[in-house]
Image (cartoon, rainbow, N blue to C red; front, top):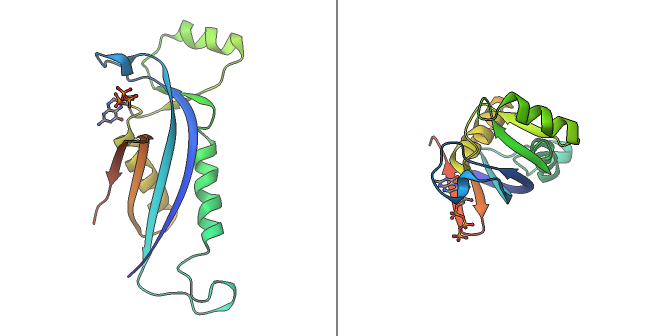
Length: 140
Ligand SMILES: Nc1nc2c(c(=O)[nH]1)N=C([C@H](O)[C@H](O)COP(=O)(O)OP(=O)(O)OP(=O)(O)O)CN2
């Protein structure tokens, strides 16, 4: 089995709704996402001969996803008042509404599912929320 690992990152603000402690306040992270995909066999033809998939293809796909969150405010759906969102909008701030609480675990599963849906055999996804804190999601 061959495995490829690709890393991308994004800088975002978030808070954990309902969290008793400092992470309940708005704060920022540089989120590092490590995507590991696997293949039994390498491609045999043309450009990708001897590869599972071209690193640059995978890197671009992960960057496209990471860029959706970059320099944004990640808000779990229904956790801020409508008038707070209106005020953010008036100030010209942008945010991304998430269906899940923005924890490292939930992001790891989110990226796992996304790349599985794209047709990759995803071995695992690791999300570093800080240099020392990392969550891994795998199904194998
Ligand atoms: N299992 C999880 N625990 C926590 C998560 C998470 O995603 N999964 N997230 C948070 C907070 O977002 C927090 O910012 C990160 O944790 P923490 O270690 O408290 O952050 P720091 O490294 O900045 O803490 P220092 O005390 O400054 O070292 C909380 N828990």
